[in-house]
Length: 399
Image 1 (cartoon, one colour):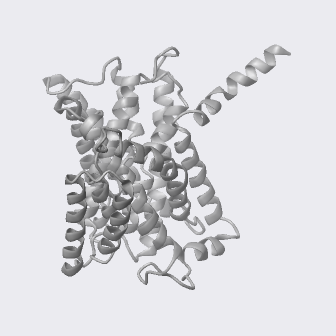
Image 2 (image 1 turned 90 degrees about the vertical axis):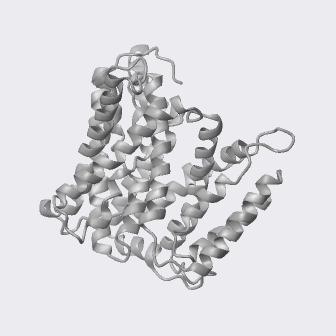
Image 3 (image 1 turned 135 degrees about the vertical axis):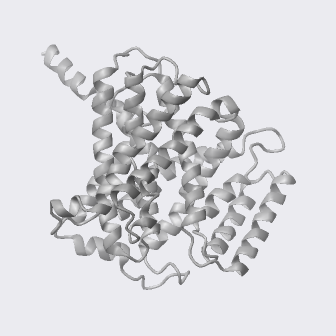
């Protein structure tokens, strides 16, 4: 009897590892994406659509007149606030705090954003209708990627786990810059000026070493409202506000890191899953192979699957050979290739950019979702299989 029990436990060990590790947020995201697709392809599709896109009976902000807008422009501002806190911590006291630490992740992230955009534009043939979607395959979803990585337990070298995390952080910075520069609506200068004044107040609070977090939270809400009305996407306010939060209180105790730890679980286990459920659902009714392999979804999928791995792996190989930056230690080239493929899992940020790129064009947004889900699924399976077959480090220490 003991032997069958042992076999069953061994079979379910990877699943157990997922839910007791940092990868559990990624697993939740995978389940949410599946649930959204089921809802969108069930008899309840009408109710699913009405829940998020139906007009609200009452809203305190006229611009946000449905639940989908409140999620994408409101809740996601908190997600971006957490991203901003993480970026600041890593730049000042973390894995990106020195030029040597920043060099390889920065180069890899830039190449991993440029190559998918090029592949996308090549596949879509320069069609002006699709041009605004060039940045959709440029982003990596760290929670999703880490969820897949969690299936491998400790087989993957700790250096590659750290590399994936740092590339994703730089990737997030690039995505924020792209949203701010390329996906802004009609700019309203009066609101821009008011936003700058509010930001100036927050910077002043930082300079005066205001140690209570509540003034920053209140001013962040004001900044969000002013940016929302300025034409710049409201989520940018989350990142900018986070950068004004001091690292430490006057007494030397942590402020930024404490706030990040308090908000991160809410972001990972509530905000991002809610966003995923609201945005990942796409009806496949009437969508045949011609629809799946149309230029737009195919361009996005190719950007994620081909562009990401080619861009990241190639630049790592080049800079390592010329001595500009060294590849992650204790990792062979096949393992680096596998990690490069996992970077092609684009979900949260890709869906978000897709909504911005084709705002008001529901059909194009739905096609973009097909490409995102297809490319992410292929990258996840392909990356997992390669790493599973080529890594053999059962006793490796997780860093």
